[in-house]
Amino acid sequence: TDPLSNSLSCANCPDPYARPFFDVDYLITAMNEAGCIDTANVSIKVKKDRKIYIPNTFSPNADGINDFFMIQGFGFAKIQSFAIYSRWGEKVFYKESGEISDLNFAWDGRYMSKKLNSGVFVYHAKIEFLDGFVETYKGDLTLIK
Image (cartoon, rainbow, N blue to C red; front, side, top):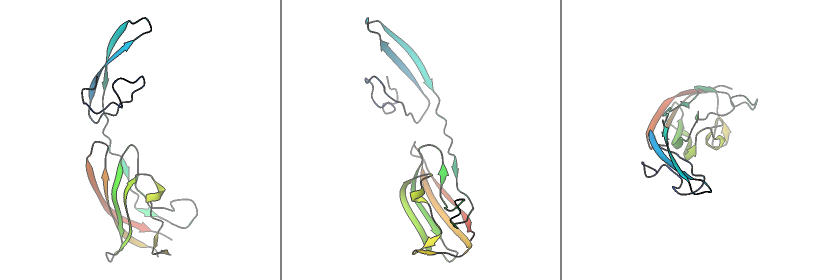
């Protein structure tokens, strides 16, 4: 049974998967080929680590090391919005509705197809976690050539 009403992929299929947002106890019922039924309780503790890593320096010089500035992490967090601004407040990068650790949501140090010079920029990101919690991240980053 699903006491949370929304954490199992299906209640009666042979291989359901569970994705609870909160700690939960499931009652599992199984039947063998002879029709014998048994039950067991399974407790799941949800670890709510919100491990997001946003570096403060990157070097888009095509050497294969730190060439992109991106939000990194583990789990099922989603990027609601991700913006980068110059020191004068000009928006040089913007993406929304993406995945963390996805190169499609990474900045390559360009603005309007031109490589920007070394400097300090500011980022602002809204990240939504699997349980619906939204956290805002702000900070500065240094582009090094």
